[in-house]
Structures are given as C-alpha cells and as structure tokens.
Length: 120
Image 1 (tube, rainbow, N blue to C red):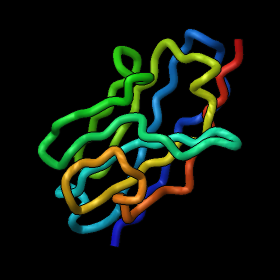
Image 2: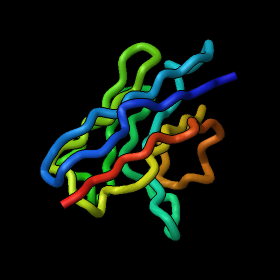
Image 3: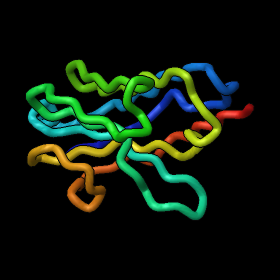
C-alpha cells in the first residue's frame, strides 16, 4: 500500500550539506512512523533518524547535532549538515504502521535508496 521514493543524494565535500527527500504514496502514510537508514559497502544497514506519526524524533549518535528529520504531508526529509566521509552510504527511507523503532526488521516498506558520497 505504501510506496517510497528517495531523492537528493549526490557527491559533496566534507563539511557540506545535503537534503534527502522521501516521497510517499499510500492512503495511511500520515499515520506511519518513518525512518532513514544507511548502508555502506560491506556494512550493516544502520538506523540514522526516525520520526513517529505523532512527530517524536530520534537520532543515531552519529547523526545527533548534524542531521534533522522532518515530515510534511506525504514527504519526509533528512537535512544533513557537516557531512563526513563516514557518512558515505546508500540512504534508505522506510515506513511502518507501528511505533518508531531503530531496527530495520521492524519496517515493512522501503524505498530504493539514494547514494550519498562525501569526499575529503
């Protein structure tokens, strides 16, 4: 029922910024929790930031103070500032119909991902 499409990835210098967008379709999307995950080559898919249907926000330690998640209507965004080479990964938008979680297995809907590359 829910389809997610990410955009906004690209190549950026260390210290720069990117804004990722997640466009969602689906009747009940506004009642879903949304999260951003990222996966670098050879690594696990890790939680980055999440926002519940009620607006509660959580961040991974690596994202605190640098990233900001928000949502409006059927679009979720991830503003990323002060980017580091370690932020290089494919970023995925995910959604679930239950409360927010940091575990990827709890999310039933995923986008295709957008590549973020940060160079020094």
